[in-house]
Image (cartoon, rainbow, N blue to C red):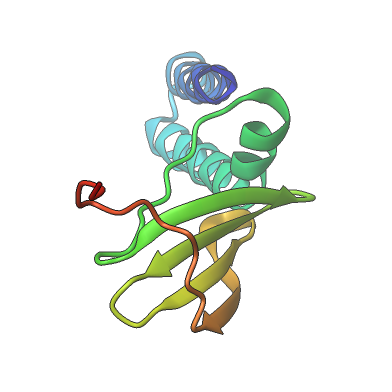
Length: 126
């Protein structure tokens, strides 16, 4: 919800700048340039700073895709950085990946011969 409020406020500011500079001052080229500058700086601020802060502290929304062939095991926060653990059954390897602000992969820990306790897909025999 906080993400939507941020973007609503951003678009209100962009529209206000566009209308004020374009209509009031009759300077449409400056209105477009200034509105785009506000929009791009707001996007950069959100993407590189606010996204994980909003998700972590105020219940925002964020999506991370599990790589093909891997199974998701757990996720945890360390300050404002997200740590995700995935398991690759083909190589019996666990991957801890850190996602920092800006969705830039900053850390990766690989544990070989991990063998986590995974539920089996076959029915138990009696």
